[in-house]
Length: 198
Image 1 (cartoon, rainbow, N blue to C red):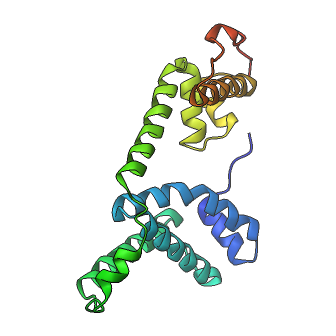
Image 2: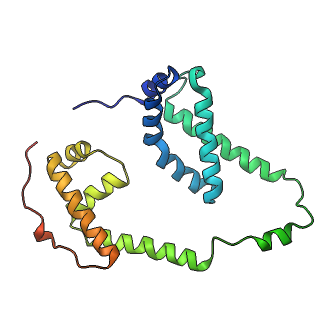
Image 3: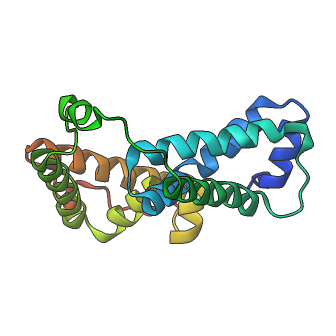
């Protein structure tokens, strides 16, 4: 099994000009960092802005980066500092223009009760669809989609071969697509009952 390079090794490689190393770092940390910012700021637009600013600071550090701390620690420190800067700036905000209320009234409200209800129903539908999956398929889907684990990593964790993981993932995704589209799904009996040896 090929060991993944550490974050620090990737950052050093990127500082020396390896763009693929930065892409790997970004892909490795983007979702967790964005989720952290969303939970801290509770405003998707603002979270996106701080997310971009955080990565811009990583890019700007480039060759000057020194591993004083683990990369993830450094990354989250930047993000946390940007959040702190945001909250600090809100306390010292200049007064609103005289026509602020009129400007605000002209803006379309993207966060309507209907949109919130629709989003909640989609999340609920996905959770209900996940709940209908057999435990071994649900486990594989969650490990792959939420934790971004590779098929090999999932196989190591669950104690089955890569092809079994792949099969479970394929059946699970087919069932989820069908459930979310409102069409009948295959039953658990449709999945081959075999365990690949590793």
